[in-house]
Image (cartoon, rainbow, N blue to C red; front, side, top):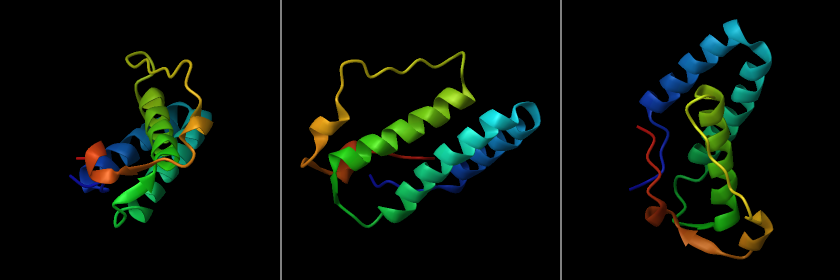
Length: 102
C-alpha cells in the first residue's frame, strides 16, 4: 500500500473547510494549515520507500489535528508520555505504515 492523495480525501477536506469557513473562520484557518501539511507530505513523499520516523510522526500529528477539528466531539486521540525527539535517526518503510486516504 502506498501513501497517496486521493480525490475522495481531498474533496472531503475541502468540504469540511467550506463548512468551517461559514461556521468558525478561526478554526477554518487552523484546519487549512493542517490540511496543507498533510497534502504537502503526501505529495512530497510519494516516491520514497524509506522515510524518517520523525517525519511520519509529524504527518500523523497533522492528520490527527484535521480529524480533531472535523469531529471535535467524536474523536479523542492522545499521545501521553511520548517524546517525538526520541524518533530522531530511525527510519521506517512506508509500505509498512499502510496510510491510505480514500
